[in-house]
Image 1 (spheres, rainbow, N blue to C red):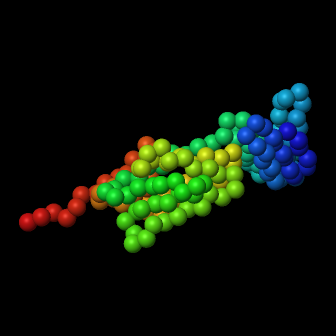
Image 2: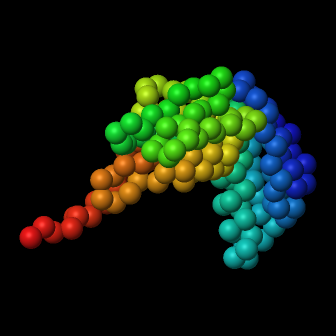
Image 3: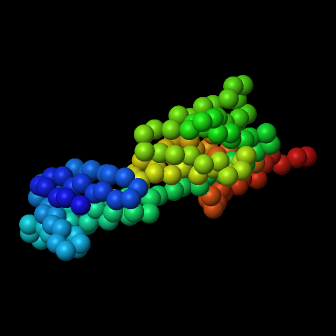
Length: 162
């Protein structure tokens, strides 16, 4: 790991990540220990201190263990298929929807209705998973759609009959 004013680079077994940080925060690496210091105790400095510490910790975890987000598909005829490094969804539209894997992201299809988004950048993994979920979010009446694993979908009662 190397730290310069305003920039931190972290390298590990899974890859390399670089992050721009606020120039006021001082990040030092000493004997394998990373330290983030703030210039004073103003409100903004305290906020940036916590943000910087968390960003550096996320970078370290990303290059050592990586991040993953599991998504599930609920609905009759809804499925996902791996096409090389990309995903192809059948989500009730008149056409299949293809999602291209950005750099640093990999997909794994565990079942026709469950897949995993993996990467070393926590923010990018979350953004790709959210963009896939946005294609067909879970609807409140039958619960059909793409959802995160373990996500609770609030269901509404349908129309009352006569």
